[in-house]
Image (cartoon, rainbow, N blue to C red; front, side, top):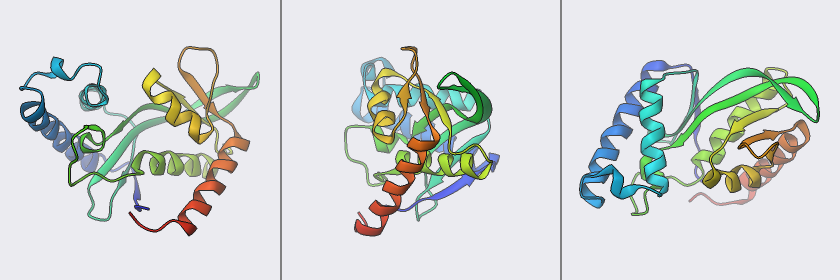
Length: 188
């Protein structure tokens, strides 16, 4: 199992990572998609490019995970929000945008690829929610392709709009499962 370091609020590190990711996207477009972003449409890579462009244009309250070589592997923006959980308003963390590094989503294998970075980032955001006194409650606005990932973690869809919520109970269960997995799985 790969290990990652949680990074918060270091704007320049995120800016540098996003520029690197954007440049990698352009390189992959030239190499695998004849230099045309439209040729990648309907792929995870196309969604990744769009999210990276959005994060570059709309900086936010960044969170990320780096691998042991200090290469950023996943980035999210979050904010504190009032969240409806079982018809009650509670405070939690809302994931505004979430993206994996381009080498983690492109179909062709890349040497920088690290499995588990997205899950590790969600795990750290949940721990941050707990540390803030929010009980691990997290909300995410998801695209259809990402919903199975969030569902595996324990998020539930609220109203068909793509909004998914992780409750206290689901957060605690996920963190326990992660702890057990980390104790018993060898490194990748």
